[in-house]
Image 1 (spheres, helix red, strand yellow):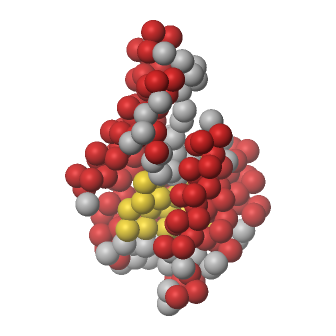
Image 2 (tube, one colour):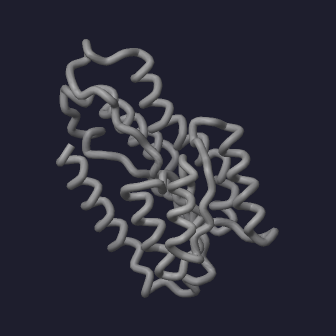
Length: 193
């Protein structure tokens, strides 16, 4: 668990370095979408980008997360989206496009929404339902969002970013389900480059 927190912090620092806002022109006219903004990296990234002047469409799973984000910056347009539900993703698409001009797209999408397996331990302790839940959130959810919002990113020649984990490359026996989902998202990203 501590390893994951350290890796998330390193990922945040890498993204901060790569996306050096002071060197990008017209940042106040840029618009991005970030998924999984109720807490953690997604929330921090959304607030950081909003504080730099970027308009951030931030998806949350809870009303409480949405309210907290809306209060943190006027540059954040928070909304509820379940990335695993195609209808919810479509409603989110309509929300985002409703806030964009007709010829305007997204500068980028950060696919951050994800979950951890509930029980750490050997494979024998893991249920098929739990495996399905982890794969659906960590892989299918990213696909649903990417496929739906890709036309908006292509309009601006923007970028897609995905939150993964070292567990996808260096799996631990107690993280079987989580590691499998992160390995799958790494493969997905390699294919869509």
